[in-house]
Length: 206
Image (cartoon, rainbow, N blue to C red; front, side):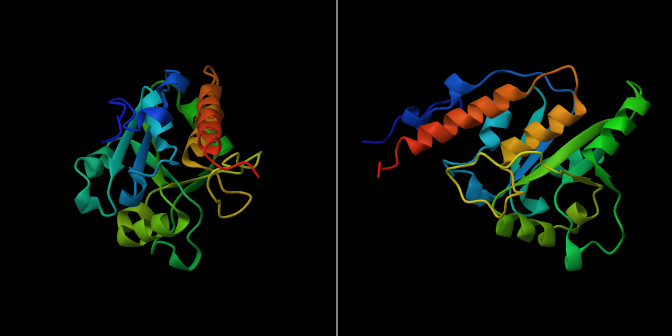
């Protein structure tokens, strides 16, 4: 017998996330390019963003050619890629890099009439997202947004690369909380914690 799946979040009903979701209005649009291996990953957190945020787009694919209107989305406004520096694999041309504080100040100076700014995240393991960067030079040329997390990740159900690594939803929380002063995005972390607890409940007690 097949498992019953929630029509909204696409997860089996026993691990449905919908009861934990709080609708949130965000002005800065979030885009998520998700590696195909993450699509059915039950521990993935991008789904929390797509269910919660009023302005959030998600595409699935490893190459631009795999992903419908993603290229068009990149051409509309200024898109900042949230991704660490590439080191030896950096783009052939230097790219603009801003911290969250610097971008917030720029948006404040531009005001309501300023250009449309969007934030793009790559969703997948470090190895998979690095491959996506290498396969798509257009990603390497995007202006970069850097994060300096003030807290360590609470991602207890999945291994992180290092102490500075954040899950996709934690990174989105940091970005939106840093850029938008008139909205609390704590419900994103609350849903994330509920998801952690939900998955930990299936682990054997030692």
